[in-house]
Length: 373
Image 1 (cartoon, rainbow, N blue to C red):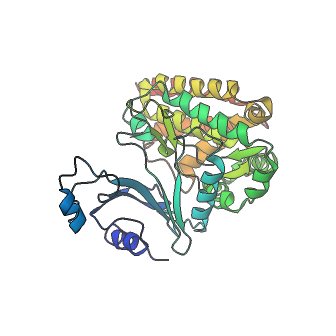
Image 2: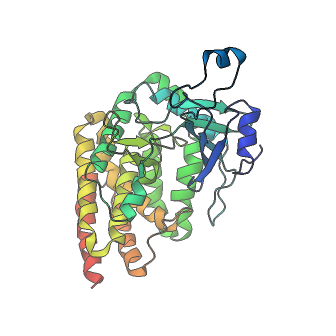
Image 3: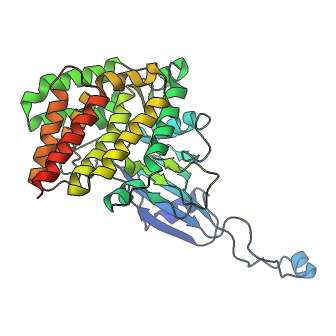
């Protein structure tokens, strides 16, 4: 596999006739720890802009139309063979094919614009081309870290997750297509839940219980990385689109839906801990997300979260402190102690549901804010 860079990607695209002969603008995007991601603007593609000023005679003689064109914007992804983390983390690069397969499967089930379209896939070079979000889209994680909490974002995330889980539940064809646990184990169980045991081996019985529940209870398709970093908030001038676009489908898996809801709530709560006394808006967002998701799913889909979601949440909290991909914004040791205490409390019982977990999180955030005085 040839590694794509900002220097060679234009030549690569021209060699496979994926762009026009015009100017190509390339911007490297954040691919998290797992991918090289590039925004491509093909300036020579699309309809011409303005009025064609050539005479009929010039057209007959083949004088070129020199008007600018609208341009065509799309995104290129290529998986890294080794993730960009301090701890060594390798994942099979055929996850690019898994992402393309997931996007194609979900495209007819979710609202138009809720997920990217697959444009093409280069299996030899493990390159996936997908449609780009509209100009002016905002990354949800970036907004949260900046203290800008869009009141519509968490409900929109809950709506798309409820739709994904509900519309795939009990689908035998999807179960057979996405039941392989390999990529989920490589990207979530081993680097998150297993790796953190190196920091506290005494947690192994509780973590084994969580892993067993994740692998035994599998009623629908799950996203596997349902995090604000993988969500783009649409600009207000795009009212016809869903308010949120969901990205990064490399971990899609026939699994336990509680993993997705716990992942999202975990990220909101961890950011709440990082905000000190300003934690309440994020706690409210977590509650709102949970209630919207609960109302939008049948019992067969939300029951795993109701019964055991808190324990999964606690394990993910600890994983984002001591797993292979720790969150970068929790640096204060006092805050980390409060997060660790909450995480251990959530996994200490055989079954802690999401309602109880959110109550416990609110109390822990209050105590952490008091300690910040």
